[in-house]
Amino acid sequence: MVIPISQWIDNIPRGIASKLNFDGDSMAPFVTDYGGINRAAPPTAIFCPSSAEDIAALLRFAYDSDSPFPVAAWGNGGSTRGQAFAPGGVVINMAALRVGGRRISVSVDGMYVDVGGEQLWISVLEETLRHGLSLRSCVDYLYLTVGGTLSNGGIGGMVFRHGPHVCSVLELDVITGKGEMITCSPELNSDLFYGVLGGLGQLGVITRARIGLRSAPARVRWLRLFYTDFDSFTRDQEFLISLSHPDGFDYIEGQALLNHQKVDDPTFYSNEDTERINRLAAEFDRMYFLEGAVFFDSASEADQKVEGLLKQLSFNPGFAISKDVNHLDFLNRVHIEMTHRQSSMTGDDSCTTCFHPWIHILVPMSRIRDIHDGVLKGILQNTIPKGVILFYPMNKNRWNDIMTGVAPDEEVFYTVESLWTASTEEEWKSFDARNNEIIEFCDRQGIKFKKYWPHYTTQADWERHFGLTKWKKFVQLKQRYDPKAVLSPGQQIFKVIE
Ligand code: FAD
Image (cartoon, rainbow, N blue to C red; front, side):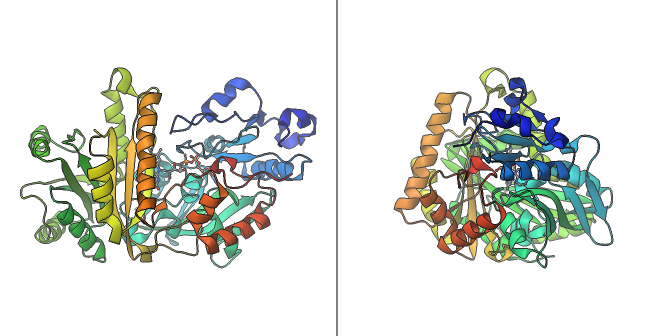
């Protein structure tokens, strides 16, 4: 049992006492995350560090205390199942490290950037682009922190070529569950380095990451190609991810539109395109679009490349929509669209109290037809989606299996994400019931999926998630770097050891 911090309040080291806030009002932002539904007990205190040393001092105190207490780094609260909660313990408000200047430093010669774990990707990109450099791989939504993302993996439409974010990391500064500050890389303390990447915050708090960069393109040709035939859609996606640089697209994703779902995104489509696409959607129960992008410096070269590629694809004739945008607007497209959508919403849809019961699984390519038939045509056959269903493949050889994060055991696998938005708790439950049906379906059919951004509550499920070999290694690393299991309790993997 964890003893409430209020009972040892007198023992708090002087250097960090003023950075702990016990005031009930200060807890409010840290008891609900993006998911909106998880109601764990509140933390006892919020910690606002001014430096990485402050975090080390807090963790040393938590570890050395007669009654060790849980501590969770809170990135930007982008979790959906309470993963950054610390019931009864201390939440580290990483945003406090963003006050007073960005901890972001670009090395043009080294082609890398050193960033604080608390930084948002949007800030990282704004800084690197000032030097003509960009990230190799990038999440779809840039208002997530570097530390929170690297604790999961960081996937998006460039993963097929460059791997997830974790594969671009060159070096980390990590504060372990014992309060030690350790620099690690593939050469130095490599067990900690690979353990932390995709390690769900279990081995340490990332306070700095060195991330490899690439030259930034001037512009991006952004395309959406519509399909009414699932096999053509997936065949084209798989063909495109098989092409290597400089052939092919630089970014590939895709979405499924169910039950005559309409498109409604004025940040991408003209009114005329919207009407045309929605007329097609009215005819088909399911429709799909492949989203691609070509990064370019010369428009004529992009014209030539895109023209050559489109000839080899089987989308519905006349349904290739494209536009040219600058690189940052492309990478920031989800935020731009979300902001636009929110500003035009009213009433219940305005999302002042939105819930997000998301499900995100990685599925071997050999079983993607089963997902189509059992999930899109089956479980979701009467669902009018509120939100998007992402559906796109990636290459396993771009992932590094030595890291803690896991992926299916097949050369190509798909990400399938139902990113639901619910306006009421009842609606949340109804979407979540379907999420559970999807997982049960996969289990029944023997589909060897992996949850990305996983959420489990029993050790047996975690063991199954990691697979026995990786699980044993993870447990050993936990014993070495966080032996009292104080870190990130909201993941529900280990319990604090007294
Ligand atoms: P939090 O939710 O605050 O924390 C997540 C976990 O990481 C917690 O366990 C926390 O304790 C731990 N943690 C936080 N900071 C650190 C740190 N510095 N060191 C160690 N552990 C830490 N993911 C993708 O891969 N691709 C996407 O395109 C994508 N899009 C998203 C879009 C939206 C709108 C949202 C809400 C999420 C999206 N995600 C995506 C998921 C995202 O990767 C996770 O939410 C991730 O946890 C990052 O969010 P965060 O920085 O707010 O971390």
